[in-house]
Length: 474
Image (cartoon, rainbow, N blue to C red):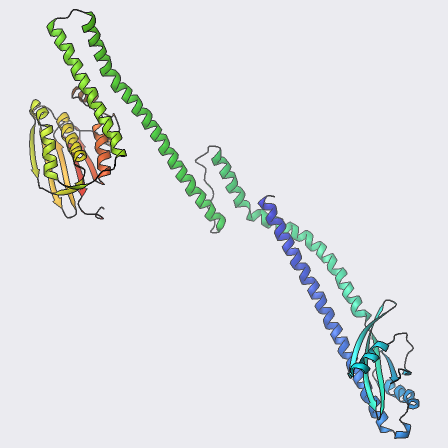
């Protein structure tokens, strides 16, 4: 069953049961009050009858206190009582009827026997006769050494008839109320579940691929909280899907770029090798072909090493230890010195020594890549500046060159695999577009921050901030 109908039937049944029980309780309460009022009046009349009877009998001489005087005395008493329409009867201890003001078939034998056996002064009994309901009230009265039973009988059928009329009237009211309640509850339920239906439609649209759809968040109730949670979930899913899409695209671009980077040197190697195999070449031509094959082979070797470092950097667990930044930079400077001399590039060094936590080979790889990129960007006879400074809780390392520089859009893509600002220059210098990607991975492993500043035609500066104390990053 749908939630709407569950709510609808639950509210309808609950309201109708509430009205039903309340109405029955009110009718029964009214009946009980009328019944108790009739009982109290019957008791009062019987008490007055008993009091008058005892006073009149006790006022007579003992010789007149017998059963023969009872009818005369009782008739006089009943005549003087207020006209209630009741039936008055007097019985002696032998259960013989001595007086009644009206002839009636109602008998209180059982009640008189109960009063006699239990020796209680008064009691009452409800009797049915030909569709009427009668209230019989009886009392034991002692006059001298004689015992009499005084009874008065009242017709209380009106109380029961009134209750039945109330029930008939309330049945009609309940029928009308059922119809009105059904309509009102339907409208209220429809209004209450409107947001649920809207959320359900939104969920179905989202499941069919409409990832931009969002649920309405009006109100502060639980449904609104659910809508907000759904929207948060949808945003998260959309973000994850965008990330997966971008990752798939990057993977596709990486594969395409990798294939292209392999294809170019392999084509050249195969072409020159085939030329050497099939043609008679001069010594100069042979040396040129062999030299080209050698350089392209070295380029493939460099590419394979870079790829291996990228793969291993995310898989290994490294043990960090305290390292001197000056020594790390010194190793990188030595490794790149020969190629700087080939372009006659001047290196200026201004470093304070400091210690950072890290893995030695990875950090040397970062510094080497940064120095080598600066060398590639610089023109022959250019300059490279290496600076380092110790701060409270951090160490700032910076490499600057006066080379070709980069546009801002290129800086944002510099860490993408195989991305090269100037592909012809990069290939000429033996680059594969993986150095900055590797640096980004390694610095992330070391929880370091870096920024790239560049002006086209002026040069580039790369600043890295290493933490020397935990919890100081801002």
